[in-house]
Length: 248
Ligand SMILES: Nc1ncnc2c1ncn2[C@@H]1O[C@H](COP(=O)(O)OP(=O)(O)OP(=O)(O)O)[C@@H](O)[C@H]1O
Image (cartoon, rainbow, N blue to C red):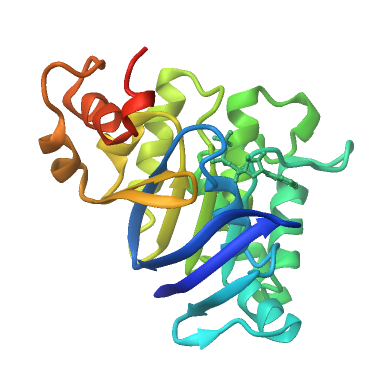
């Protein structure tokens, strides 16, 4: 999916969080980095059509989201995994993913196959009958990812999906991402390693503005000695921050 944000403004009551944001997203994985409060979740929620923009436009494949009707239509093709997601206490993994497919209005005939595919993608086929409440944190995250990708939406928004995953699960997550070819994925994270390893593009957001937009290699090239960080890309991140936030 091709996503175009033009002069986007967003906020909560009088508080402006995103101002005059212009951004294009295309197929591939884009990592969204930025300090706490930068506006990453606000951007995700806006793209997910959960929060109508306070100003500017969002176009998905050339169609502007201008009303509840167009937003509803768009949601069929958007998979959004919020930072915290819920489920019914008795829900099994398969029910949970199927519910996601139903919400996205995947037609009944296609739903079973779509759920099978998503279960396979996240390697949870064997756990389909397990109750969500009994899964480990990592497995639950994987079920959440399946919920977001079931039915092959063109736009997938993942808000800090690797929180709490162990190293092997994080590698599994990167594999899942690498298999989402042709999908426009926006991944919010604080884990710079994940961005360097799994993203085609990185956006660094700070106080609602874009400080950097380029490939991980281009970001790494900015990393100079003298800034805090164990890797070039960590040093680049620190260097991009405003002067007063560069020191530990
Ligand atoms: N529902 C809300 N009402 C009022 N202010 C909010 C609301 N949600 C978020 N904010 C404020 O908007 C700003 C941006 O928050 P947001 O959650 O988008 O940042 P973030 O980059 O996702 O942060 P984090 O890395 O901590 O998840 C913060 O200052 C936050 O306090």
